[in-house]
Image (cartoon, rainbow, N blue to C red; front, top):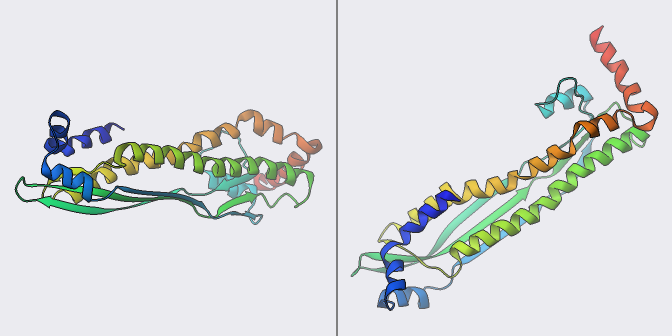
Length: 234
């Protein structure tokens, strides 16, 4: 939030004067007639699908960074997206050289359809398949649970900064300064809030959990993967 604090300075003389003295005529016009700031924040999900078309080797490559010797039996993939539209009603005061803006900010947080991959080595309905699927459902639910929590945190932070607070700047600068604050401060902040889910996902994929999956169903997982590993080495 350090960048955001810097941008508070651009409310400058008019806002500072309001704390030290009665409102000027221009401040009164801004605060009483320009209208309220509008914050619209929505979070949406597009469901999920299960894909059984890829083998564990492909899934291991798809996952990217793995521990030595780690085999990826299932993988849940999505991509968080953030879009922000910025506008607002302006009021100018040629006498002072200042203008004010009531920000209208629309933020949309979305997940495209989440894909849950289960290695094709496992027959749907088998014990091993169901165990891997249950593991991936933990990943899926973590994504789904995180979105409304991130939405609530972002909404509160935006409200604290913008709700019912006209912003002041030199004439011709309010829109660009508001956009700069969004681009340099709020967009990185919101993306970081969305990305916090990845630490939760990493906790699910603990060495202990991978070891457990390797032993479930009477060793069914290892019995299916071991022949495929041998065929690769021959």
